[in-house]
Image 1 (cartoon, rainbow over the protein chains, first blue to last red):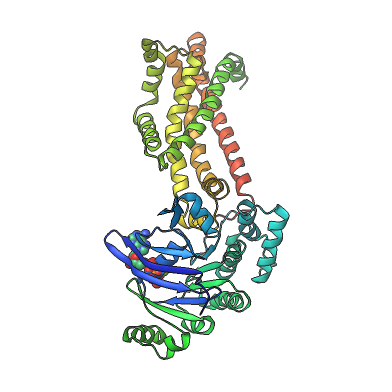
Image 2 (image 1 turned 90 degrees about the horizontal axis):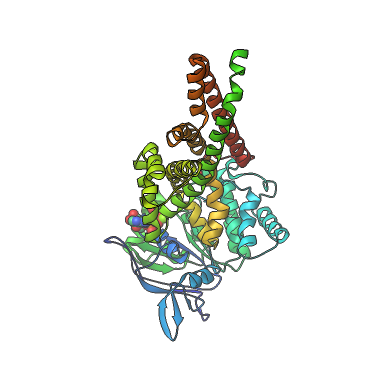
Length: 258
Length: 220
Ligand SMILES: Nc1ncnc2c1ncn2[C@@H]1O[C@H](COP(=O)(O)OP(=O)(O)OP(=O)(O)O)[C@@H](O)[C@H]1O
Ligand SMILES: [Mg+2]
């Protein structure tokens, strides 16, 4: 890869109390790359995504998005902690889809998707609604525009969640176990949408997932995380069929068996 | 029944005082409840501290004592309030302190995922409050707020102790004049009950209006 990484992480540390969740975490993600993160529960996968989404603040280390600091900024030639304005500017680059959807229950599907483009991006009501409708149609919910979240199935809710995040047109999209809260028979429809996005867009996608077969199928690279570090980062072929580390093999055996 | 009706005109003046106190007190309580409830959640400690002090002081002492302080205590420091203003002020402050806890609880009960979604969508804190937290908090706040409003109506009866001729006070006068004790008490009961029902009905209407077409169980 000769292009500069779109996301570059160096020495990222995160502690909750005395519990070290990320330890000197490094990662480079290429523009347009589809990168899956796998690893045992508690290894820090969500924490990493949440720091990228600015939902959690790191204790040390740097993250750069297109060469610009996420949690740091330049002021008077010095690097200082990011202020609210800087975080707000950087957040335009990143979007996130949540495990538990986090839809707004008092809004229709269309309102869920169109609200932020209108309020944050300054689109007119018509533009925002048009964008919302296009995206909901794209995720197969063109007939659910006026439904409230509680009238939707889990799979439909998550597709609204994806449309809502897409509406902000981020360059980097984070997916944190977006099918884990779904009944098994509803997983497929959401994976279908993700697959379409992976194939049809040049959006950089970072997916934390337990769907190993799916990760293998759509990822450019797969990262195996354990105890707050990336232990192995390679092509899906290598990770899944020929992992270097015994720890990776152990983990894969454990999850593929079950 | 007609025996009851002929008593009503003499009570009307008192009814009007009670209504004024209830409406004035409710308006002030509403403002203070939001200031107190949001203030207690503020990240800026002096604001939080003032809110907590207000809530604790006015919940921790009785409305009766507060009324005496505002009407008989403040003049000792050179502050004289008309009885009606003292009444509205105390009712507003007292009920507002309870309301603040309702507001705080209502906002706090909203799932953390809602504000995380707002951050991910890059909403400003104000937009998050206006478009996401407020509409959800309101439907949770309204039912207990309706109960509090009825509590406020009942508390207004204390103001006769600071020389205001409210409904209860007028009833007592009338009783002394006519000696028709049972009828007057029955009438007072009916009027207060009617007012409370009216308030409950109005709050319920607002609640339904807010929830129209909105299915609220569960938070996702
Ligand atoms: N807000 C928090 N306060 C304290 N500890 C936390 C907090 N968030 C996460 N942790 C802890 O940090 C560790 C890593 O959590 P994280 O959610 O990143 O793991 P994960 O890899 O996403 O796991 P899973 O596969 O179960 O989702 C866990 O031990 C968790 O208990
Ligand atoms: Mg997780």
